[in-house]
Length: 406
Image 1 (cartoon, rainbow, N blue to C red):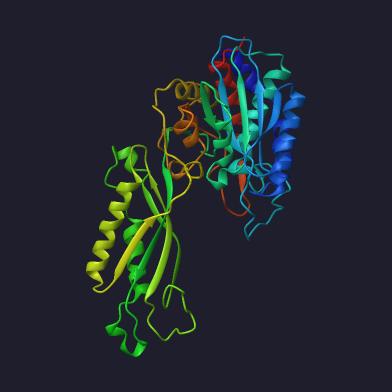
Image 2: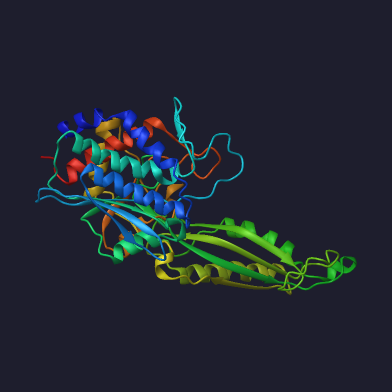
């Protein structure tokens, strides 16, 4: 630990920031040509570092960037996982979203928190070890994937191609906390059918819009009945993201004097490991039965939208005393001098991440921990510079522990 910590304290901070800034300057919006260009650049960088590196096919013309730093043998392998694709830019930015601006506190840019800072941190940790002439016994596998924002298609493709390790760290933004559990994410649709009348006789109507407004707080307050523990219940959540109401299922909007008799709401639910979407559907049904009782004449239907298995995010869980968790905890405390917050921490516990695929489909033991989070998915997205640099250090020390520094 002492030798690893000395290396961690001696990282080239300017080079680490330059690497991240370059990544931010790539406009790698999800499902655009830019994500492939960044993947190609990541392979180029890893080859320059002396890693085995290649583009891995995903779907269509999309590719992951995979790098392997071979160990000397006899150590456990550690895989780092993070996505290169970003959300589009929203309104309200006051800095160039693709400028990679660095000031005295932050580095800014679209995707810098979600999650290029995490990607750059693992890359820079490996580069630091290589530039200092160090070797590990175990392999380090760097997986910089695309399609996380489409449910993790890039990581699923990597798993299908046989990409594996003994342990993994997913670098989604947790503000450097060790996330040991996150939710399964699913999408649902609710349709409410009321009874229309002209507004002059609205007392005789069943207003589907007003019923929807009554329903939303009931859904917002929901947790699900099959939570195995309070920790699992703590990452249960229901959110309505869209609502539309008008006359009929064709949403005739040209006749506002009539009471709307149809609304469609779409939303997302979060359930913990061991909880089921079938049970969630039953819990939704109980809420809708109560709504129908309070709105006589209303008919309410709910369905969970079917999606291919690899395009939804499974739940993730790892014991707090697992080897990868305790190694990360020890590295954090060595670098920061205090215990690492660990558990089903929210808001990251409400995320869907590629850790779910690595856990559910690859059977790997891992943890979610990355820089960024508090300024994620907002105008002027940014990451605290000390957090990013400490993440490089923590990853480096963890690599030396798990894979054994020679």
